[in-house]
Amino acid sequence: MKELHNIIKAPCLTEKSNLLQELQGTVVFKVDPRANKIEIKQAVESLFDVKVSTVKTVSVHGKQKRMGANSLGHTSDWKKAYITLSEGEINFLDEL
Image (tube, rainbow, N blue to C red; front, side, top):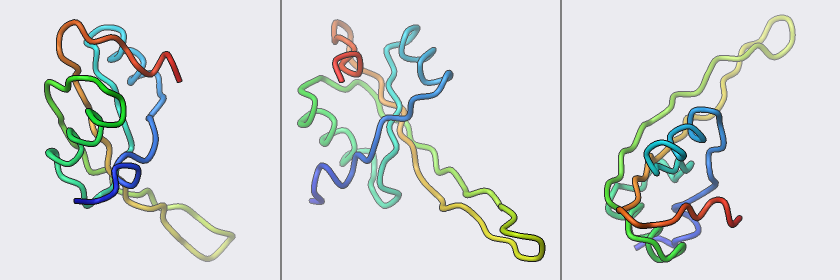
């Protein structure tokens, strides 16, 4: 198994994730692109001491960016996980 801190990279703090957090109790994390749902669930449960109900993952493709006048580049591909907490679990991102 991979290191837990290498699987969960950072919380994804956007307007959409804040809305999901308030309405559905779903938190969003940027995760390692090679991690699967089982590893993500185990990492969140052991790092934050909460009970996870479901894990949904999305692979986000990098965007093409212009670097100067004549050259093109692109941002890195990354993966995010939508993690729904079980009933009765508190929102742990407010404590951070």
